[in-house]
Amino acid sequence: MTSTTATPTVEDTQAAECLAWQVRAQAVIANRLEDARSHAETGRTRAADRSLDELEQSLSEEIIGPAREQFFRRSFADQRSQLDPEIVDLNCVATPDCVRAARRAPIGGDDQYGVVRSMVDDARRQLKLVAGVGENDPTARAAYHEMWQCRHRAALTSTVKTALSDAQMSLFNVVGQLMIRSDIR
Image 1 (cartoon, helix red, strand yellow):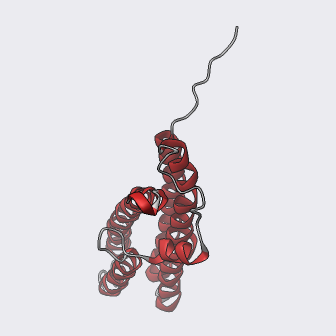
Image 2 (cartoon, rainbow, N blue to C red; image 1 turned 135 degrees about the vertical axis):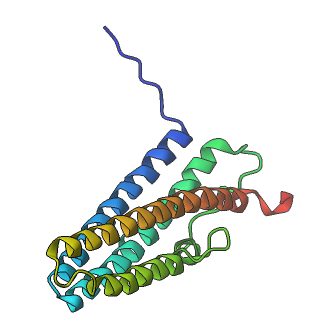
């Protein structure tokens, strides 16, 4: 019995690539918020702050930036496979300056790093508010901290997943524009 395996489309490959980054982001978010919650519940506010700092740094430096760079670089090969060879500038490559721009440029008018920073700052402020709740009732204290964690895990996960998807689509389109020969743009 022979098996036939369809060659994955560019869209399939992009979807799998984006999903892999989204899964990584989801794990980072869940782990760092769990750490912050655990520290906060036991009164270790500095350690909770460090966990939130690590969350922001990990999302920026280990997820969003590297994912955007990977999306950008891969888009050159993907576009070459889809664009008419008569209009493609085969000398167009991902230069270091372009890669830096791809990692940092606003996507859809949004500074994705600033959005993450703002959300982590919001989580930090709200965690400090939760710290004073239920001081004499450990069950209530734990419940409030759990609600804090669930709320911010859902919000950050949704935002980062959307940011990665938006970045991938935008960078693919930018590369498509860059690769069209300048004499016919």
